[in-house]
Image 1 (cartoon, helix red, strand yellow):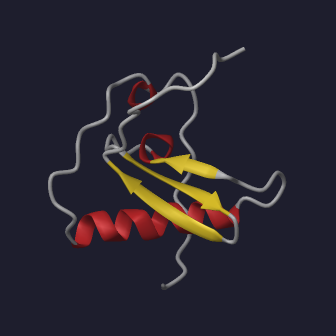
Image 2: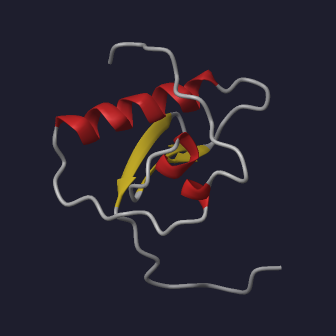
Length: 89
């Protein structure tokens, strides 16, 4: 994966953070490049270290997020919550 300058993190009140993100219908070159950019942005966060990043956080309204799981960074496309356990505080 080629390192590029990470995209800037979007801040409130940017409307992309309020909109329902769009489903990804095709994992094409553009989606793969977006995921690479998101991984790069996540890896660039050092203090505090980033643990996850959603596409809307970099200004892209797509249902994609990346997360650190152990020593790996994994991409999730069109994630769905299929079960809940316990109650949020």
